[in-house]
Image (cartoon, rainbow, N blue to C red; front, side):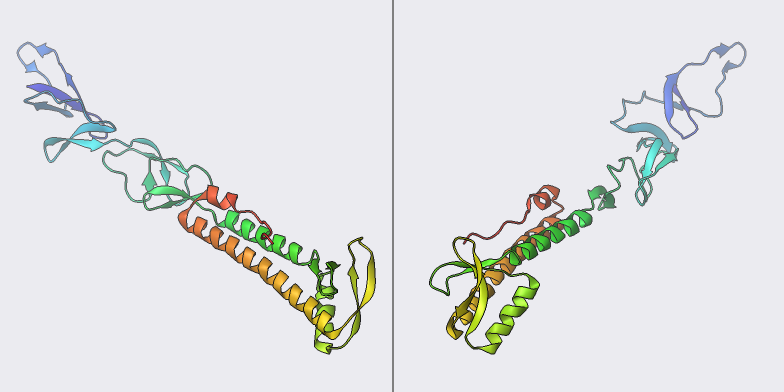
Length: 229
């Protein structure tokens, strides 16, 4: 027979040998057990223990473990699989949450920042001015919010009007526009703005897809770019 000692958690340690006491034989402590065969080396992360009187390999997670709700450290002293709410895996960062048996990086903040970046880029592009050839050659028109309101008013008025724009030399002046010309300027701005809004929508769809996939690299890769003319 081979003698093993069970520690406080039940792990079998041994085989061990006790001296023979004359007249009494081998004296075994209460936490000793005798087995007919020597136990084999347990698997990685496991130890031998008695379960219902029979030796079995149990997972050994004793020591420092981590709470899945907060990631904080906890001490675990029992053999066997960890109970729900504990893991042997440390939390990589405060941006990680426990999901489906693993720590998953929470990318909501990065996603929100990227959406704000796209919105800002799109708005800046819209208000940065646009080109129209309504006068027969390209002229640059301002498109700040007040300018957009002024252009809308001019289009709605539907008459000839002196309207401000810059020529190829950058000279700004109030130049006469026929009804058809001011309509054309309005149409050019509408198309210009729509292209930028569509570009922003496409980029935000990429962000949503990256967020759903939990792909940080894909989120970081999305940046505002003006659409090709």
